[in-house]
Image (cartoon, rainbow, N blue to C red; front, top):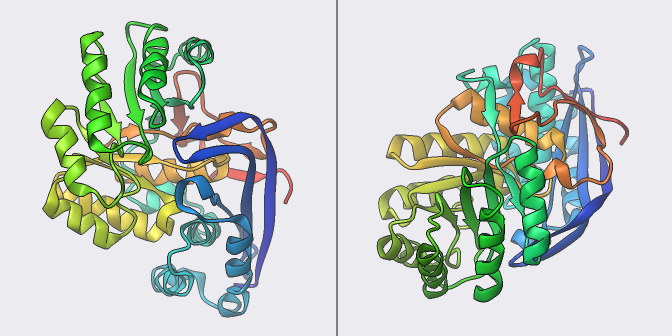
Length: 354
């Protein structure tokens, strides 16, 4: 490698993005550029989200800048052992891992003139994402759902986990937007199992059954995840509960969840890839999600999901929360489609400015 550059990457948001753990009102991400000796340049994005896992922009920047000396002169063609070593050096800093692994593989695949998804297998080039309704009042939720449906998108991820009455109203308001909707609920650890079960029973009485319930218990309460599914038969997705290869292997044995939500920001591209393979081998369903990320990181995640194939749930919509798009390249099309067939090399997204 000839160069590694790191910047803070800040952006205003079009509206707050609130989950059970707290609200994001501004995007405070990190941007990495890797330059190879042959001239290829790759870009990577890290999206720390304190409300999700406590990671901060300042900590990610410090860690990333400390890797420059290690990376300079290294052969990007030996990317697997290089990323393994970087993961060791970066420890549990998932956003930092994601940014560096993304930039390195973007540069390598650009130099090889291959779309990034080919590296993971090239199984498919079209993916359909849901769109999220954050924790807002019922009137705002209903209006948001109508805007989503107007884009030809009929899968909506509804954030819950703070108040049973408010959450029931929000879900019902979203469901009223169309009889064709597929609903996904996401509590982000905000509920204990009994509260999650209570919400699902309330919704059932209203004729509503979500297709999936993400993280309806604390991340360490794996028996609680299983309890929610056993009591309601609604499939449960482990998000915060599975952030590593070891977690995936444990979940494969424990069976507390039926689906695992894989995010690059938990552990970087390399470990996310391994987690997906472990889950698929164990018969666990696959979901691809993210934090609050631009099209750079979201499209990298789409390449992983599309390259491997077999993902039943795609939740890659957060570029819609940026007040002004900071990138060029891939966009979420009508119907929530990521069309990766248009990418000729790398991720297919570049930042407008650092």
